[in-house]
Length: 104
Image (cartoon, rainbow, N blue to C red):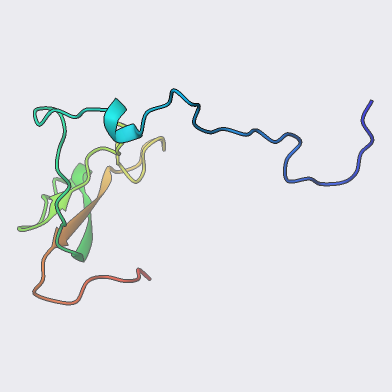
């Protein structure tokens, strides 16, 4: 039985690395242009808004509405709440004003 020595960061150490037969990642993985998107810099987010879809509010002109999360779940801010209105976050990108750096 192990003695309790108080809180520890880790109980085990795992060493991982390349073997003699390992190839560099660039040589092992090949992306075809048909399935691989090229990342392009996006304009900064300059405005945000919250809309109540239950009341029929529409996405403001020039804004995009977050309908789903990156995992595919509903992005309704009240998701999971009973008898709550459907609230969604909308955002606008651009360069006509300084980017948002904080939300209060």
